[in-house]
Image (cartoon, rainbow, N blue to C red; front, side, top):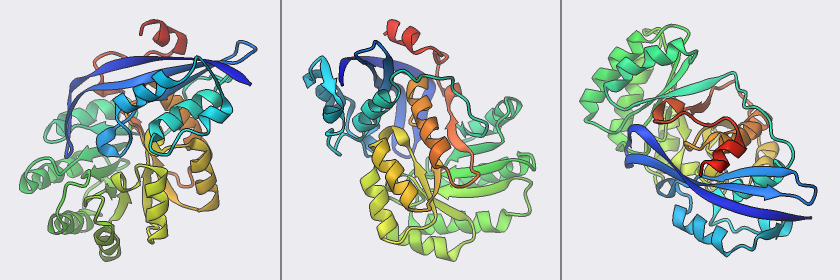
Length: 320
């Protein structure tokens, strides 16, 4: 089977720059892919790299797309090297999606809160929109200030809510101990459930996170440490059996991810890379198939964008 191949870059501006421990992000840039088979059926895919998280750069992805012919085969798609994980996801998603595009539907989503005090004003609106799980960025400001905000936030959220803390690898070992000790002690006193802490330590400090996971009852999830499938497999081999936060858009080949998850009963939380609805649909299809636990998926990010996401792939394509 031969597919007609086209690609178009896109840019989406955040309402306000997104602040994490990795820095400030103001524009999401990516690539939309279009494959058309010999019967005229169309498949859509998206390449949404985050180079500082572990994927290829946008320029590397563009260079790869530019060197491809206008007619490609499955063999070309499945030979994309592992150093281009966002490309692997985008092309395989487009291939699977040929002739089978559907509506986006998910019942349980985690809403992302801004770092700092802004979260205190942000969560009520998201609650009214139906969100019941929230993720708050930490490791951005002084720890004393963030702990004070955390205290206010955790007492403010309603009893049926869940809160995740995401440090993006920005804490020292001692700071992580203080955060986890605080979470352990506040759990049960506050109405909200402190579900877990994401990536308290840098990627290179897996042994420290393994030790922390044994010392505190608050669960720890790996995020940056398992950005790609190779990293995920390595951490599993080194003994990690707690939560894995998987970002399908940059993890790599959906086929290989499916094989790994079906072989191992991992506790996975699937999460957004701030993709458009095209990439999100492909990611949610994987999520529905591979999720083993009843955990909210981390795709509640639309409120971070200045312009509403399109809902039709052809319309999005025409506007690029």
